[in-house]
Amino acid sequence: MDPDIEVMEGSPLLSSSLVELAVARLRRDIIDGSLAPGERIVEDQVRRRFGISRAPLREALRLLAQQGLVEHLPRRGVRVTTLSDVDVAELFELRDVLERHAVSRALPGGVGRLEQLRRELEAMRDAAQQGDISGAADAHRRLHVELVRLAGQTHLLDVYETILLKLQLYMAVNLRREAEASSPLAGVHRHALLLQAVESDDPDKVLAALSDHGALRFLADR
Image (tube, rainbow, N blue to C red; front, side, top):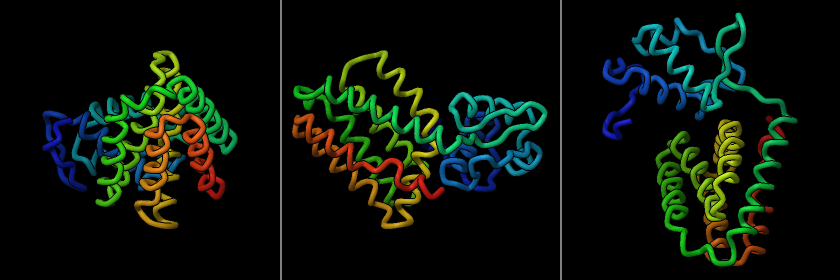
């Protein structure tokens, strides 16, 4: 999407990029909690709100389904994706296993490739300071991808990104609840400590930082 195009609540969508902007607005609503897991997306209401026809909205919903954010139910329409507590716990455990494997493969010797990790941490910080939950969640997800990318294993990264695709909504829930419970920068601080551990080039320090990461603690009460 053109970064100069601002998606404003309630504004008519531009005809040149109806699908793209509909995806952006719906994705933002899902990530920031305006649309909750399991909530039904009523097409007629969304079309009136966005000022678009059925075809671009349905294409937007198809793309969001590919991103793991919505699911189509036979004869019941579309709803925000929902996973059971068991599914979420299992996926976070898989994420943890894959990250730990990546760290063991990348370190020591991987600290020369950390610029993108640093950029994502700053993007996460900027978004958190602006109250941009969706932006912070996206930077958070990209930061974790860059951590695993350090291992230099293409198939590992492919599998890991598939896990994150399913978890992105719940990772955003964690960040939002952490911000509500402490401060908007709490999640940034945790990830800054993780980055410091990576910069030490000591895999044991990184594994310890990951152990303190606390991915499941906020989901326990959902």
